[in-house]
Length: 460
Image 1 (cartoon, rainbow, N blue to C red):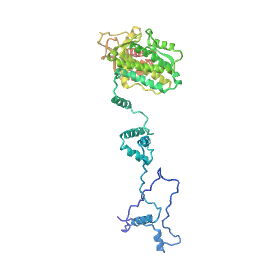
Image 2: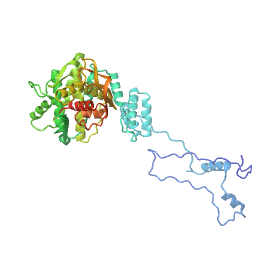
Image 3: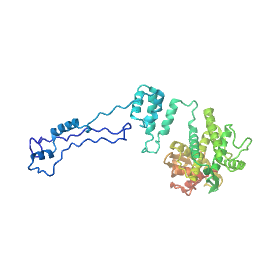
Image 4: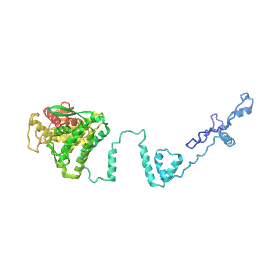
């Protein structure tokens, strides 16, 4: 390869790159001034004419190629203090005990040890298995401290934690699957209550339900809502033989009457002191049901005007817990999400199963249109297709003329499509049938009766 001018003697070569200089570290003496090597570059006498003095011209032009490399080597040998590539010094490794090395694992994981300490720790990790395992755990923990990490929790985190815990030590008495919605919703509400301050327990909360064809309202506080849940959950604890929060010898009362009785019996306005008794009662209820066995799910829980099996009663209590937790969250400006899709589906299914009886009750009171085509019990009858969209959604067929009839797609005369959370708001009485943004098709009278029956399921 020749140079740019085509001269064979002018050989193009890659420029020579000097070796790396040693950088300052924790052991460098930064207080002393660096030694400056004498300048060995040639200078040109400005009074000399390079065209007439060949010696001056030779002195002014720097050497190139191999000559430059040879000159640099000679200069480095002849001139003390010149920049010469040096090998990095080995760190001074201290002799430390096992106890000291173990205490340095946290600093090592954070890369906060000196070079000598780092070497000592890493040498020790090759010989000590317990410290090596602890070092790996600390390094994983440090990864979680990365400032650019997404703060959104992994949606699979809970399942992985539970799987890991159950894999290490399975529960001797597992919680029945039909109790998990109540367990989950009470735990979510308790987490909300832990996060709010003392003053927020007295924040005003407006409870709403549907009664006498109107949305009713009752003003209370966050603590008052917890008292309401405590009193109504007492219906379930009484059925299980657990202590009633209203005391012994209380006559049969409806949920509304129990709430009013509990509020009236308080010596002072309810406050955060109610959280402990409410949470203890939920734990006792779940533990009792878990130890009771399978037959307990069919135990009857009486609400004075109606009754439910324990399986459905705990699902109803989970629904109430979520609805009132959302009331509290709105009062204290706290973000609160709906239940999981599987739990929400169970709540919607319970409401759909209760609708034929609610519709028959309204018909007896003259609030719904009379039955059109009565059929034998267990036979398919005139039905409304309820299509619930979103998480927890599905398809249900509501018998219109008799609670003993079976809903059938072949006998459907109307269809209503709603979002799952909106349908639950209707069942909770938070919105009226007229406010429900439902897709409707078919018999308008049947649609109006079913939406009104759904709202009538609500109560204080």
